[in-house]
Image (tube, rainbow, N blue to C red; front, side, top):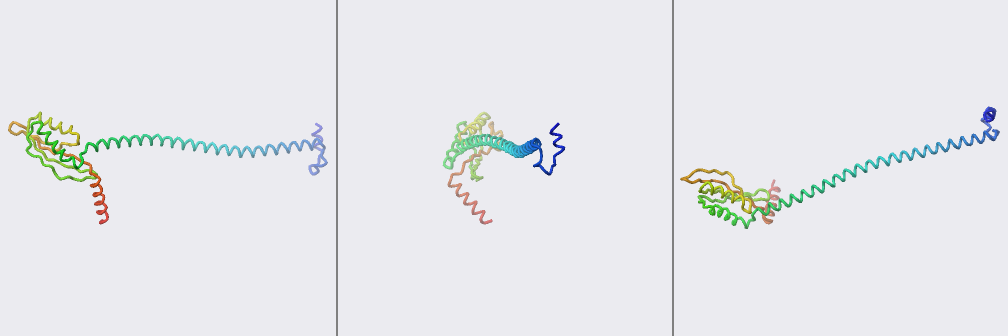
Length: 208
């Protein structure tokens, strides 16, 4: 009550003449106001810094999850590439080299003779280069009974080198069966042939 009475009598333009209690109250009020204002400004900066830190944390977590997924997929991809390479290498081993082609042709011939078949025709064609492979077709015509022809086809499929039979045509002939077919085999070009092919491609490209 006393403070209110003193407040009524003070002159706002003459702080020096204010009663001691009013001066102390005004000082405390100013101090509290400054403290609260400073705290609010400080908290604002801290709040903004905290919000920014949270945004950065969210971004980093997202990047981490993305990179982790990529790393996991990369391991899977590398594993599949390794498996593919191993499969490819295994297939290459089933392709005859240039020096083994004559032996393979002999194996095909012997597979028919071993089943008691009579070769009417055994004519290797010219090699056809396709990419890094060379394809050779052998036109064959053999005569025998049904079982022997079937076993011959099975023997061809089980050769250690890749040989396929296509364009098969079987007709009866004087109590036997005659089979016309195309046996195809493939080989991987050796390094010398690959180099020559690359040089040929470069030359052809330069002339365009």
